[in-house]
Image (cartoon, rainbow, N blue to C red; front, side, top):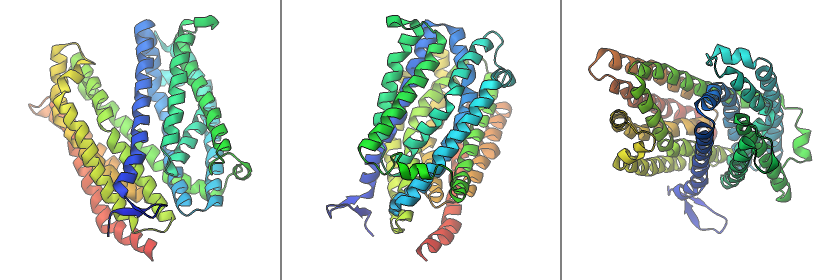
Length: 460
């Protein structure tokens, strides 16, 4: 079987190339989002001071927890969107859109009310410092009240990727980021007649950019007569289809749980790191910044594999699944390998962007050397779990991922850092150890259970 798929012209296009064309805008979107957040942090930290930056940073863990729900639901709905789109089932597509939009909006309203009313209590619960909590509460409430709109925007960009369109979300993100960066200094410093809002201007800039981009997106979909447009058929399904909602939740909640467990494990790891002093903590932050960019190919390829596989399953073209799987692996080791080699070659220069202390940079450099290669393994495991999730198999990939984090990463990090001569380096050994175990568990289940049960049932 050739690793190719038919295109409209009748010529054959390699699957890896088709996936690569999807990946480029997706990776650029992730990178652009990180750059936008970085610039916002620099503006607040350098011009408004440490307390302002601390006030914003104190809210991030709570905000990420809220957003993790919609990201998980988005993952579930994208699978259903991909299957319906692949099957050319327009009515099913509209039903998934209507049901997901209604549920995510209602979820946003509920979380906005809970977060807006109990902001002070929630921020006290996570230990927000007393000298910044009043500012953080006001900042948090601005973003909490925007959650319904933010959730709808996230949902729609996920729908587009589910149909194989990664370019439009990228263009929309360019618009959103541009508006955000333009409004940020205007609202923070009170330029051209606008009120001087200080740190709160950062929150309002984010909300304004999201609202404007959502409006632009809905207009564009209408003008283009896009299958995802918010038309009468979608509005007819806003009452929500119970069976579709159950599927979205069944597919999406495991992704949300996985994100929450990853966040909690990072909290555990940072407590181990903090025991080695502020230099170690700073090195941890720098390495995490580097790792966040290195893992972009792996995360993006996992999304692409899941979407392409869901479309193939929906179109009942199951012979494409092995081709998609192999193409994902090739792209993972090719793109991921290039990223990692570049970071290894220029690690000292890259780390100097974040660190000014030679001793701290030395710690960070050692940690980069230990862990960075293993993100290829992380990507491999992501591809295996992604192709299983595309068929609706979500529980076991979740179990293996959580087991590798809490059964391997955290215990290995604690044991090697506390009871061996490795010291802080032992913490970073936990990452490749967890990635390797996760890949082994995912592949064993994929090879000896999923392929037999799911592929045979699909073909049959």
